[in-house]
Length: 151
Image: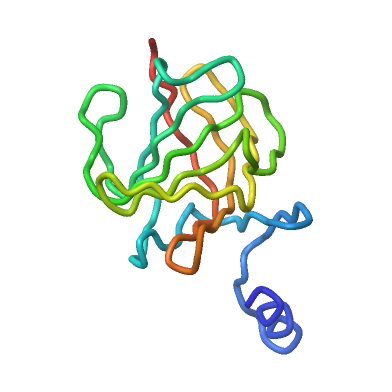
């Protein structure tokens, strides 16, 4: 579809969005979105868990529902679990760094396809983008900013 968008641009002005290509995967400059469990999903809020994080990655949960991060219970429903590296850079998913699609409570679909880029880390947030797919019913692409919860 991205190739078609490029072709359409030659004949008509079309908003296709910027894309950062990392070889086998790319991140589209749009809010993180896609499908989880075959249902449309758009990132609204995410946070880290200090207990499960370590020096190399922030254990992160991402949800399609807004909530008070770090103080409220996480929303129910489809979510993404991902280790976000603690240093700015571009990382391929694999056996050491991967993403889990959780369409429903107790269902975890681990993917090593795609990757994550970390563009900025502050004292309270981490920003970046990611692309991954488990199958056609579980695929996400786009940018995010998550909250770093204090210990």
